[in-house]
Length: 326
Image (cartoon, rainbow, N blue to C red; front, side):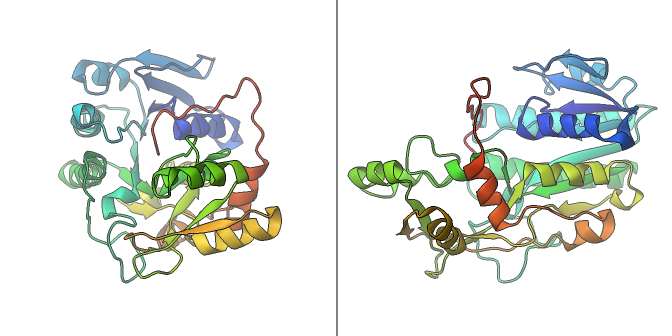
């Protein structure tokens, strides 16, 4: 088995490769990482090829002898690049994959931006049948286009493909920084811009956390997944006959409730919270399909997500680097 991994140097890519190499079920598997701006270190089981997935020649060469593709490369809100990477890049990958004689499975990691996550009101749990609804911006649009393209190419050419749709992916101390009122905030909202500047500085210094409220005034519920749980789902999908042609929601069993977060941090760490009003909407992704077909279960619940982030201590050779804002 030779797996081509795009986006191999990112958060998910690095964790996936490490998890696969450590898993005795895949002891004979080799990795080919298609890298663009950043490179991985090569080993006896990991080879690196350099190039952009927007270049058809690079993609065709990278697919030679490949059995599986795990497609992780993406763009955030970068209009100048997003169509080349997210749309053209995926198209060239699928075009090369469908004519590669060794090809067996194509796995796409999607995102809940494809269904508008908390931007739109959802009156029932979000399932794989929930219609696509991109919120404003090129990133959400690209997530819709990726899912639809893979689905249609599977129909057109009968390839074995699946999509694992993930919400906001957490690792290390990400969740702690997602609640920061300082300049070190990870992702959005950018809390320091929602309160007066003197208050933001005080909240950042004291470790005060935001209690985000939805459009109805209730503590907002938002979906998350820890990267470790996403990786176990990816490994569960590899060569799984039940994954063929399927879309799976891969997330925590329950969404993160900002009210529960504030209460837990107050009880366990003595941290205060401050209400933040919003026009966002609570949502609840249903991961039942992944549990049923892939026999997968997430390990992380709310308390584990919080505790792991607050207990994480960075070493000097592990600086906090955020390549993308979220």
